[in-house]
Image 1 (cartoon, rainbow, N blue to C red):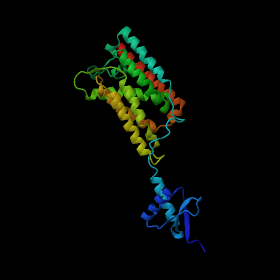
Image 2 (image 1 turned 180 degrees about the vertical axis):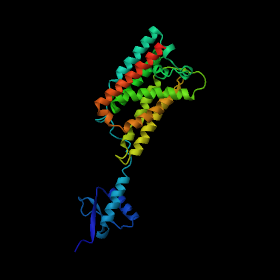
Image 3 (image 1 turned 90 degrees about the vertical axis):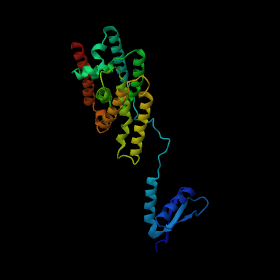
Image 4 (image 1 turned 30 degrees about the vertical axis):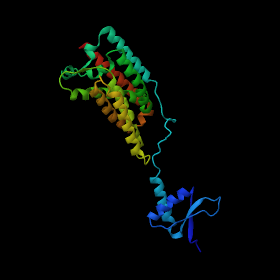
Length: 288
């Protein structure tokens, strides 16, 4: 005859007690037992309830894994792209050219000039800076955020998306501005990279039951960093906020295109588009 009761093994008395409460909530009777001193703890349940009991415990374990505070983060797969230093060199190059040739009049972002048709200022203003301190701050933070973005989404796509986020920041700031407003600097591009990084956990959707928590945590962490770095006194907050918001959108799009990271042709194409969007606006700015 089949046994009247069956044993569900547990690792400890505490686990056995937790599981017994789970079974009790499902109307399944269980008895905590340790047959011998050195043997594991377990629950004795009626043989006809064994299947339902195991199912209930499995469901409980899947829902009660919690969200541990400590997680291994710095593991293989977290990449930093040192190609971001080339962007830093580009910023210093334009700073030197501005000091020698006075590029601000032609390239500084100005809402009135942009409204009159000089759309290229949305791009050219990103590469100009007010002084060396302004440049150093954006170059330092930008090298880190951009390097992580390029490491995550590919050199070309990460660079192009961050640059477009800076353009989006200028565009949104222009849309909400009243009167003639002038601005310059790559701060919108830096906060755009931050926005792209903040939304990268969206790639975990459907892969883990905790995807929603990780996505929310990533966005909230990005917002806190934005508040700390992007709302400093004396900064042009609309462009910073616009860059961050644009970065969130572009980062979400990139998470749906994981093949771009590994596709050499796509990386080269994005790099070429970035180069074109640097040269063409400046050619128009200087020729007009």
